[in-house]
Image (tube, rainbow, N blue to C red; front, side, top):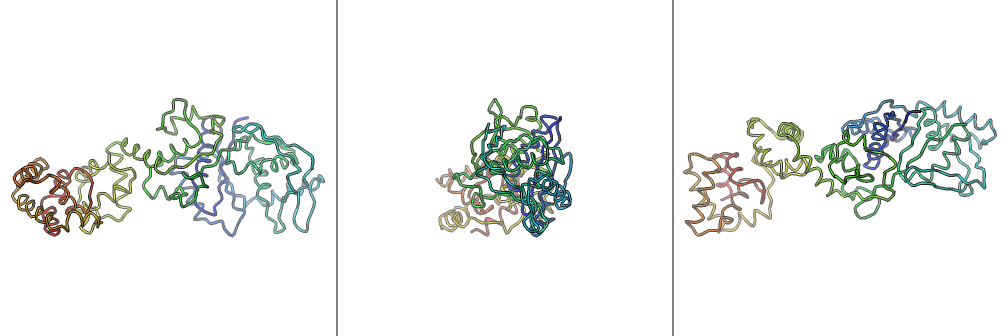
Length: 427
C-alpha cells in the first residue's frame, strides 16, 4: 500500500511555525516515498473557525512550496459520518450513552504499545486513561474520535505530528480497534522551543509564517531552516533546497530531542539566500517589496534601481532591511538616526567640515564616484583632516544613516543636485 500522509490545520488562527514544520515533514515524506499528501481542515469549532484564517493558511503553505494531492476535506461537512461510526461502536457494546453524548468505555488493565518511528516503543497503561467522549451532547465529535474516523476513511498510512500528541495516540489506537481498522504508523516530532528553551511564543519574535513572510524572509530560507530543526543531511550542509532533499529525507531520521528556534540563525540563512539570488530575481523581489511598502518609484528607472540593489544585496538579511537602508534614495522624508545626527551633524566642527565639502562638490562637473573620492582625499590632506571627519557627516547629511554602502557610490547614484541640497539643509 502506498504511503498516505495528512496535514490537518485548524482555521482558528494563523499558520504557526511548528505546524508549518509538521506540514513540511509530511510533504517531504510523501514526495520521498512517491505517496500522497492529503489536506484536511479541522473546523469542528464553528465559533472560532474563520474563512480568513483558512485562506491565510492555504496561501502560506503555497508560499512555502507545499502543495497537496487531495483535499482540502472539511470535518464540518462530515458530522453524519462521525455520528454513524459512534453509533456502530455503541452497538458493539464498547460505548455507552450519557444523555445525548456517546462515551467510549476504556478497558482497564491493558498495556497499549506504540512503535513510534522517531521515539521507538512507547507503552501506556489503560489504567491511566479515563473513558473517552466520542460524540458530545451538542452533536459534534470529540477531537480524537474525529481524527481517527477521518484518518481511517482517508486511508492514512502514516501520521507525522508533534510530540504534544503522544498522549492522544493510545486513545486513538483504542478507537481504531473499536472500528476494526488497522492503525497507521506514528511518528512524533519533538517540539520546537524558543531560544531560551521555553515554549515558542510571540515573545520569541513571532510564531506565524505570515509574520516572517511580511518581514521579508524568503520561503526557501524558512523551509530550509524549519527542516534543519529536527533533521540534518548526512553531509551536514546547511543550505538545502526542498526538491534537492526529497530523495534523501526519511522520517525515521528525525531527531528525538527538542529543538530551539533561533531567529538570528534564520536571519543569517535568509541573508545567504538573498546573496545567492541572481540579479534579475532579486530585482523583481525588491521592486515588489518597495511597491508593497508604498515607496513611490516614479523617476527611478530600472537601471538605477538595479544599481542601488547591487550596492545592498550583500548587506541585507531580509527584504524589509532593503527598505530601511535605502529609503533615502526614493524620498526626501526618510528616516533619520537621531543619535547619529547629534554625533555627526549637530556639532559645529562637523558643520564647518560640511561647508568645505559643499564648496568643493559644487565645482565637480563629472559627478562620478572616482571624482568624488578624489575630492574627499584632496580635501582631507589639504585641511589636515581625517577622512572620517568628512565622510561620516556627509553620509549622515545625505542619507540620515550612520552606515550603508560605499559613500562615493551612493553619492553618484543620488546625483549632484540631491547631494548638494541635502548637505545645505544639514548645514
